[in-house]
Structure formats: structure tokens, C-alpha cells
Image 1 (tube, rainbow, N blue to C red):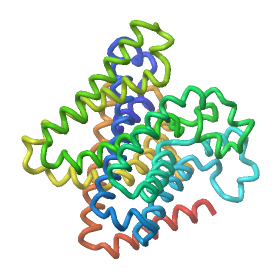
Image 2: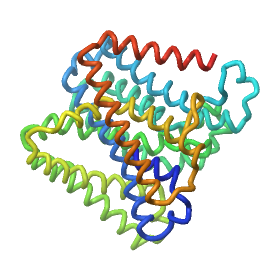
Image 3: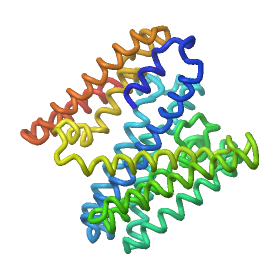
Image 4: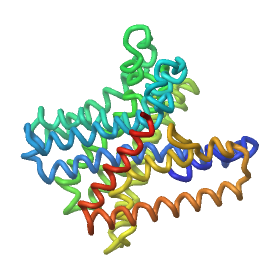
Length: 349
């Protein structure tokens, strides 16, 4: 994710051609797919540990909803249309359109709230897993229809942006929420079978379905041609299948690892912080100019790699330090987060 955004923002267009770059584009696309699958998986694992409290109205559920709402708020904050609240009346339609477009944080926040409601409705772990899978399949199959509907003329732009990319959204609910839902289903099946039989889980729940989806995508291309190959359901099947096969290989490889370095745990726990900060650095925000504004797509491969290494080092260092601070001085860390949030808000005033 970090190097993908950096390369996209800085690499000169003359280097963005050829077979190797097309391969790079495909594997970069798997980043978002894996991110959403693993987000749903992590949600399911965390829910499974406290199923009774998360399956009914409780303080734990309210805290979850608050955190998921924070994802949505941060997603919109990254694209705030003006430098100050007082200037909102002068924001252009194009800026409003960019502001209301749905990015990955809004997608995850809204989908997580929906999945949490699904937990409370289904009550049973088994029913939840199969229902999440069924909804994921329905979302994928219904995507072409949703994309054909002119939602902008039927709904406010803030809502229409969640249904199709016609409003400028990069991650509308259709089809992207399907990855989160599938991840949630896989998490439940992992809790049921994978903890004791990881080999079986990797082969049967991940690799075999992944291979079947990839095969299906190429069969569709062979039988029905290019138009069917490029259809949304077929491309989702291809990317989802490749991601499942990759996760299966990672699961099998993890059996050889007894202990991961602390940096992996710290980065995993601070993904929201890393995502927000690195986007401000790369693409800029209402609070700062980013690399995209300072340099733009003007750099060669060597210069771009330097910025990639610098960004990776900075984000890993930030994650390690902040994670350490949260665990050693939790009150001070919480106060610092509130102060920083207050300063960002004050900047908009």
C-alpha cells in the first residue's frame, strides 16, 4: 500500500508502460483486495472472542460503532473541500464531489457497522458465516446493475457515492464490501476449524476456492470473450481468487515461524495511523502539501525508490514508537491523540 501510493504519485508516466508495469498494476490491485479481506477476517476473529457481548446491545458494541464511525470521519477529513469551515460556502461543485467520494476508510467503516448489525441479527456463528458469504456473492453479482443505475439523479450525492463509481468513488460498497464480508466469513471458519487444522484450512478454505475462482475467470474469457473477461464479477473473481491463493501460501508458511518480530505486531495494530499519515504525506491534505503537490509524477525509478524507502522507514518508526507509547504510557498517549485531533480541528476553524 505504501509503496504503491508513492510510485503512483511520483513515477514519471514514461516509465508507466509495458508488460512489467501491467503486472505491477495487477499485483498492486491485490493490495486493496488483501487489505479488505484481512480487515473482515480480523473483525471476525475479534468478534468471535467476545461473541456474547458483541451479539447483543452492549457497551462493547457502542464502542465498536464509535470506532467504525471514526474511520468514516477520517476518510472524509482527508478530502475536506476547503482550508477552513468559513470557506465552505465558496467550495466548488468539483471539490464537493471529491469530498463526498467514498474511499477505503468510509467503505470499511460503513461495512463494519453493517457486519456488526449482521452479528446481532444472526446470533449464531455458523449462520453469521454463511450469511456473510451469501451477501458477498449477492453484492458481486448485483454490481453491474448498481453501476448502471443513475443514483446521482435519484439520491443525494453523499449517499449515491456509496453505490457506484459514477460519483467519483474509488471504493463504493458494490463490489468492494464483498471482500470484507468474505473475510468475515473466513474468520469464522478459521475459528471453527483453522486453529486446530491450519493445513486443512489453508488448502480447503483458501487455496482450493481461490484456484477455482481464478480458473473460472479464465474460462469465462475463453468461452465468452474480452467483454465478459473485463466485467466486474469476473475481475472480482480473478482478484479474490489470487488473493485467497496467496493467503493460503502465507498460512502454510506461517507454520514455520514460531515468533514474529515485534515490528509486525506494532504495524498491524497501528494500520489506521499509518494509513492516515502516509496519505497526508504522499497526496497532501487540507492541512499540508504532499509529495504529489511538491514533485508530482516527474521522478525516475531510482528517485522514486528513495522516497519509497524513506516513507516505509518513517511509517514503521512511527508505528513502533506510537505502539510502545500506548502500552507504556496509555493516559499520556490518549491525551496526545486528543490534543493532535484538537489542533487539526482548530486549523480548520
